[in-house]
Image (cartoon, rainbow, N blue to C red):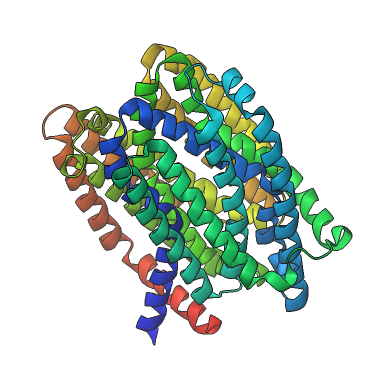
Length: 481
């Protein structure tokens, strides 16, 4: 039984990464059929659809996470609430899409220095961002209801169809960027149709604003500015590179960011698996169990980052365009930034649980100010290295700030020893990178050595924490079943 529970946990974590995994699986295709400049344009359009997924429905979709526990005791009210939120988002998105249809070309010419057309690629990107947010909202609902079968079906279908259809459009039909974006939109529309079928009884009915929408809007109107600011912090550097350097450099940096952000996909998957249960521990005031899961999350996220550095250092095995392989020298520092992002994600759970959404706005303003200042200072002098250092320092500032706000929201003392251990692990990763940079060994070899070292350290020195955390997860899933 214990093995089955642990396997269930692994499966749930795997399902959480399926949605974004298609883009990483297709990287060898993108790098073969897109030049660095084309990949730069593709990156800009990907960042654009993320922005529109944020403003989709005024960000109300994300209130499902915070308000699920409010309606969880009454399943009928919960289904009506989700139906109202999805319907409101659908109607709002139609208005946004109509506005962009008539003004998109003008906006693109104003924002971009290079020639990036709104039709058809920009319009496809906007449409995909708006539609995908509705599907994401329904997946939130399924996750917190622990409806693993339906969650698995939609997630796997989205991954499989997106991978296959993008490959066909880019490789077989030679449609380039337009083909990749068209394939994504078609798959998302199909998944949106499934959402409508599954939740039809609660969709497109009369919306109860006073009971369902207004409280969620108050929450989301605090979080959406913070989300936009966070988006600017994460992706604003692409727009600066496009304006101040060139599209080729943008393509190289975007590829670097894509590889290093695999670390983010790892910790988001881990967080997705444990987040509903951590909230249960918060509700029960069982801080000791929550801390054990925190420790396990940090250790696994760090090991994940170490693995990405190793894998990225050996990209030459699957990527044969030398223009993209130049990212290896930047990869270690860029990936370490995502370890700090994992810390931010973890401590933001305490803020979400207490619904202190205004803290996200403060966090975003602090991080944005830091990011813009560092980018303005470093990019003109150091090019891509300036962006890498700016990104990493910004993520460190975000981690420190989120830790402070988390303690103000829901105090949870993780312990100085854990921070010291994390600091030591990062130092070991940097030490191997320095050895590789000084040509004592190749960066490829040092990438492998640092991963083996980090994995051995974690296994030997933190075996008690790992064992205890596995026991906590086992008991957790046993109760949920």
